Image (cartoon, rainbow, N blue to C red; front, side, top):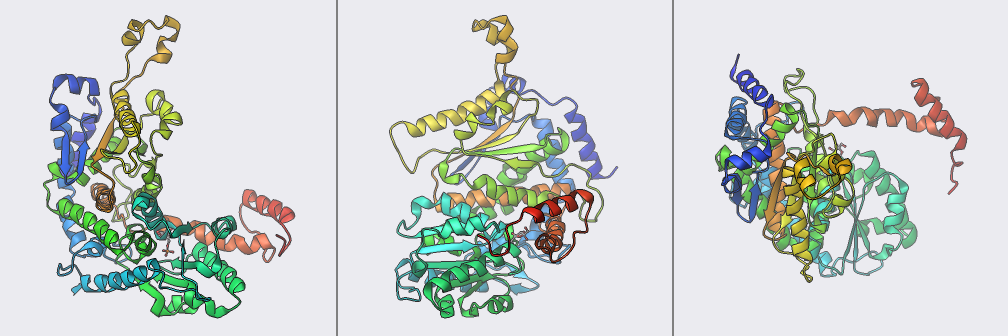
Length: 539
Ligand code: F6P
């Protein structure tokens, strides 16, 4: 057996008799202090996990056997770690200060990064100051980002997360879905004369975004009476200058980025333009500094004290060895309500893979189904299953020690709920405890909580641009750790292609321009839809 096989075999052996959380805590009164890590304003409690020292040692051994340190260095050194597409994954360069070198193919990319950041900052300042005028001479007050996936989820999440730092005189909205209702409802109450669209697409070929961009252009030019309005009301974010120009946006009004930035890692690039306009360049740079801080931690901290490494390996333990198929992320802060949706793409598009880097079936199960909702709302929805269902859902709880909206005892109540949930999940309530509380025998089973349900808790001092930056980079690197352990490429996403291709065929079949040629189920639905579809132009 090689080192990887030995490490996997050892963990499989551990998985046959995983320790119970009650036993782990009974055996070690100092567990809560020993199993916690701090970095800057972040504290990770990972005591409530089904791991003892031996299991942790075995997980670190697996990481070492997989060459995690070398994979991290390869990523930071700009090697083409996205091997199937022959590209680097160097999002860390997007938050590097001037003077720090990050090379792709021998070329330092940091000066280009700062050139674009500088152009973004001038533009953002101008819009914020009311100096960017629309076609009729009125200042822009509304920003609508048109993008999907990584060209939407990051800035949409961060604009929500940092709303407390935003210029409230500006309206910043996001349209992603090709469902016309998304655009219609988003612009319904906006004045075209005061609205700027950011067409955000790395490839500038994405059907949803280009369809929305064309409809937005029609809405704008129809209202303002001239095609020339496009010059004042549309800017682009892309890696593809030619396609941007072909759409009718002057490359002067394009903010570029590079093929070594993956879509789901692109928030700190020009893809964050809407966020920069909302919160201003200074706050945006604070977010970049937070990311950079976590990048350095990830690159330099020993594995045992490395937050992304520890979080990544715990995920591997549950998903690959204990057969758990889901993972919940539960932010106890309304500002982070889009964080789980953002993480879904980051985690599931990156690591939802079934073959390893060599194209062979993976040795271990890969990414879990990730979901989440802010607390306390989730408690009144799906937590029942987490406490008493037949499936165990490992969870990350995220809370803040200070509220940005202090109000009576709200924040202590919120935090009490967070901590109570982690305690209840971990330790439950035994049948004897339920009986001792006087519950009638017929209800004892119903009122028993099995416990032994694991969670991490991230406590952050306060939600700031820098702390958000750290959280984002923490999860980005957790995904990279898991990809290394599973030996998969986290940076391609061929799984989205087949559906796109088939949609391209089905489109004309729905309108009647072509006859359906699929399986009998799909053909029948196409015929059903065609018979009922509104006639062309009917609205
Ligand atoms: O859904 C696939 C995907 O390629 C994502 O990876 C990406 O973030 C999204 O589409 C949007 O792509 P683009 O920015 O090129 O429009």
